[in-house]
Length: 340
Image (spheres, rainbow, N blue to C red):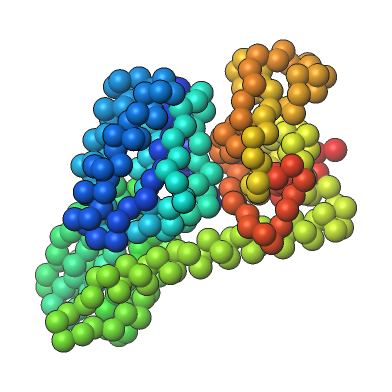
């Protein structure tokens, strides 16, 4: 995943509460399930020391902000000033996950989240378009008109909404000819972020569950393609011994310190820790290794929290890998340049 979506975490003071839980298959069931799960989630948050105000913020998101179309799970990450991430996952963990710690925990989002969690859905027909913003909640509007002025009006409104709501992608549904004409009316930069979906219309109109499945399938394919590409690049550079790939805690910490990480590959880090200085500008696998870098050891952090956050700080992409690749210590990276 691109790290831009996670950058608000860098400016948010800790401690952080990270909560992951399952959704039901329908909206009514999900609302009831969220309320049933909340007491146990709240108990874990309180037991781990979460502030009352943060618990209240998370409770509102979990029990009141239901997604319009169901998926497999939810992810909520809050800092000291409130909720930063509220995302919907294609698949939930087998058991709820609750962490309260100095840093946020985002690995489940990397594993089961969507490459573009905020997007615009445009369903176009000869009379106009239904335009829906998919972000934390869903918001819809219509654009009416006819012929060429209509296409321009829809294209203009799509551009406005993408800019105003900082949306990452656009999905277009409708008759093939109408989709092609609307795509041609979009500015090139926006056209490159738009995916045309060939979803058929039934007697009663479009099936929005079918549209959602088409969107999710497209996003899943993109995520798997990113994993494939990262795996191929990593294996190729390791095989060439080019210095453009690193694996293991020591090598990846060193690459992060040099700002050389282009893509971080996260495997099974388990309970590994790293040591950081007070400002978390430098990390290393041990206090001795950190001291060798001229930094004073100040804190011990979970590697699966600290390393992704440092990757975000240097603008690296993040990939949660599967069995296709097993880097040493569960962590690897493709590098922008050979640091030494």
